[in-house]
Length: 272
Ligand code: NAI
Image (cartoon, rainbow, N blue to C red; front, side):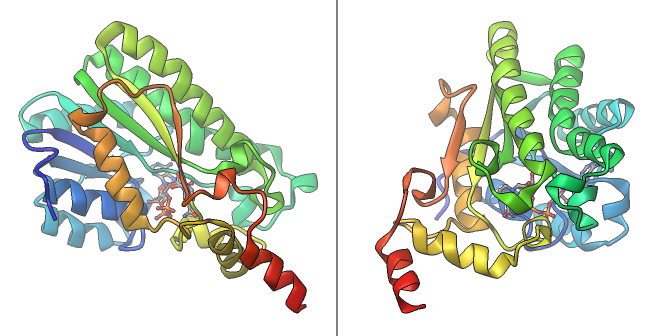
């Protein structure tokens, strides 16, 4: 059911790689809720082509941008404002990548060049997107920026390796920039800490993703939150209903982050 929560709003949605991507679901919901927006991803992801189907469904322009390159981000804001006919009301940062995870390097054997790359792509890119927006005055007053994060920023998940630090940094940037952008332009910045989700980035992390997914599902009183659930939550954060929410890391995980042990997990262990 649509509520018209984003009627008249203009946005930028990054990170839709395929129809499993959280950003893909956010785009479909944003369209349903009345927004117009552009879609962006790294030029290399564009070549995979799936984003074109989404762009068609959402009547959205695709603007390639490597989120680590400031000139690309400038171009993204400029082209988005041209295409949408004005300044931006919401931005989704749905970007994460760790070469160390891709190449199966454990935490005690990280490659430091790749580590820097993980931080640049997955965390610093948020600062670049915010600083560039502020410099260009590309985001409207009371605009909303949301980045997606994961609980490993607070609690150790051994196979999340350098992405744990990337997410800690991402959340810290959201807090710090949320202060400065809030003071300057009433722009809010939040992170949503999402359950494990079956996407390219999600299932790419080591440790047997299906087992991990089942475990967190059994631990969470409400079960894992799906990508669709996440999209619903993100839409509320883009809407005017959450105008005073900023600088927060918001857990969207069916209660997992506050649960120490569940009866289902106890039963699982007893059965072994
Ligand atoms: P995904 O693989 O569909 O999305 C990740 C996106 O990042 C891809 O579209 C990829 O092309 C993009 N990207 C990578 N390098 C980039 C660059 N240099 N410039 C611009 N874009 C770049 O996977 P998913 O799960 O939808 O990931 C979205 C966000 O959600 C990520 O930040 C991820 O860490 C976060 N997240 C995912 C969870 C999961 O279990 N899937 C759980 C919690 C957070």
